[in-house]
Length: 159
Image (cartoon, rainbow, N blue to C red; front, top):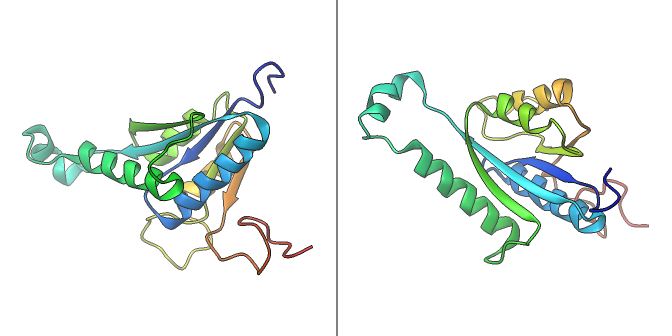
């Protein structure tokens, strides 16, 4: 922890899902309490099936990913982005990008499940990879509604 500037950097994986909105708001709450900054990281890549169309400029994958990132930021914060929050769009697979971003971070925050294709699983593959391989502590948020009187992310309920 850097005692001169606060906690440091919190990295958040963002994919446009409700879980990533919750992860982003949880990271912002922690950052507000600790003086950290938040890097909201969204990823994009070129699927093999679209490589030719992408190379010809007929598929705008980065533009779509930017729209998802911008919309997630709006859902979490409204029209006014906090000064300590940055939105980063990175080309690459989410697992690899987030693991690399965890280097030097104080914390990595991810949603329990994102936009993956296996809804019956408790954790998504990106969340599992982050838990297993991140180079900093990992907070996995759940998008389930908290008990009455509890703050989001607080499973203990009213006190």
